[in-house]
Length: 130
Image (cartoon, rainbow, N blue to C red; front, side, top):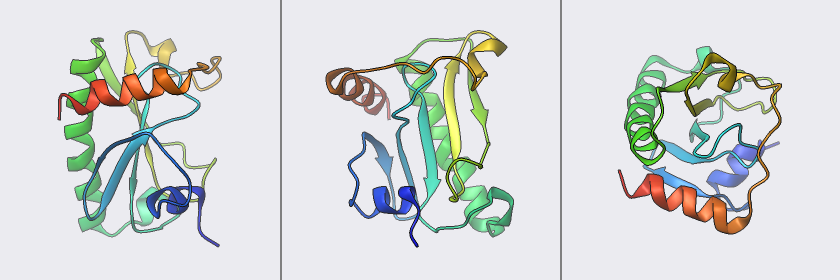
């Protein structure tokens, strides 16, 4: 059964796309910790990040670096935090989150509730720096 991320990749579920190539997709997290919180997924459906083949894993990191650079320009912050949780969706993925303190990366924090317009604005802002 395809994961929710595979359904997003296949266009079966809408998303706020940031960037895409033949192997990877970046899109906004719809339950963000901060504005600009982005998910990066390989299009290859593999449950656990460290089960990815080396080429896909390294490509994911390279693709993520480009997106992280754009997020930092779009949402000035001290750092772009990267988290790999991997329990909520059985499809390898990275969280890229603009942070100013370590507390900003706490997934127990209340998630933002953004409107469609705010999500569109966030996505467009990041895309403008890619």
